[in-house]
Length: 158
Image 1: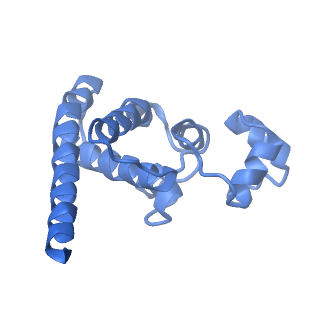
Image 2: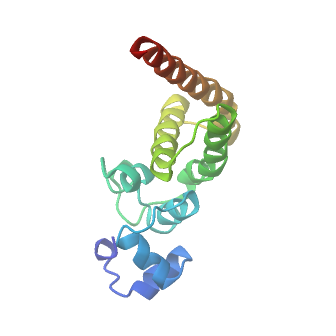
Image 3: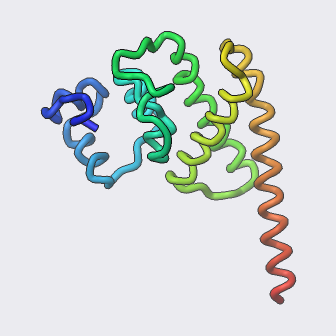
């Protein structure tokens, strides 16, 4: 990642992300999974597409843009990460389902993409936030369906 921005100095790069040099080293070696705050920092500081960071698919930058991207229009999408992440955690907790960090990031990316595609090109904070009950209901239905399917499989195996 540092090479893409021509920043060889790990300390300089880490300070842009507001993390320690050793913390950045852990992420670069794959020893830690970045949290929503760090993903947001990559997007805010460098315009990196959060979905690309998490999955490795798609363009490195939002809309295929370069590092000189205007971040003003994307701030709402960045701000959406924390409430969406909290909602995902809540739904999993409410359904007594454990979630790993990798699963959490996959869910965050999936629902972030779902929300932004539903919102369309012109969206406002209230429009995005008004979609959170839909996320809660849809994710809850998915978890209930998976649980019912697993229980049905257990019964048929007995």
